[in-house]
Image (cartoon, rainbow, N blue to C red):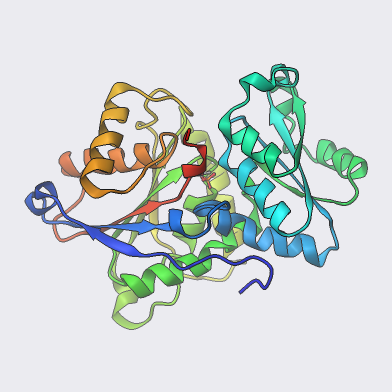
Length: 316
Ligand SMILES: *Cc1c(COP(=O)(O)O)cnc(C)c1O
């Protein structure tokens, strides 16, 4: 375990409903929103090894990229603060620079945790993964450890190995794991390490990781997800889960909602007393219900819904 960055193990709880009995499936929620108060859910797993690497390299700043609603921006700011480092957020949308009254809850929280912002235009933001651009940025910020948008890089993907081990100890026989997709880093990590810490008969269970895209036209993410999966295993032949990306459940696009989604969110929270966020987990859990009622999940399945956090973005 990383000596600098710690999170709690989180419960896996079974939820019950007549619908699940009708389709003869068991449904569990992995409550990872409880792992860390500020660096919540998947963001913790993605940042853990990055922060460790920054410390090893004697960097004193974390610098990363995101939009105004990026949970990763808020997570990076509070992680940097807790490690005594400073942080920079390169934020999409230059118009925000002089309009702090229009800042999202997320940006305000990051700022309170000491993050300095660099606002850039949408056009400039497209350069965020460009080699030359990143080299220039590193020259400008020599003490910064630069983390890509959404925190997704090879170190982030590796960070999911421990979570998968924990999940497999809680429920070795799971068959389906639903997870939310922004960049696809979490999907890459969970699919790569799906058989972590299993042995014997449990290795033969057919496991599928199902990513639900929170943004429109998400299929462009697939080649990058495959690259991360390959890097995760360092070319060793380790058994991976089957996986797929569902792109039809974005409910209007990134950070957009519609009436159906908001109704589902309220009903689910009421029924199970588990809070959801509108950007990611609500869409993913709704997608599960739709896949179930469409007959896409065979009877006897053991389904895990991964609650990846994101609650910091909810307005108070
Ligand atoms: C950031 C985030 C995601 C998306 O994760 P990716 O690894 O970028 O796909 C999913 N759920 C929540 C709650 C998030 O904050």
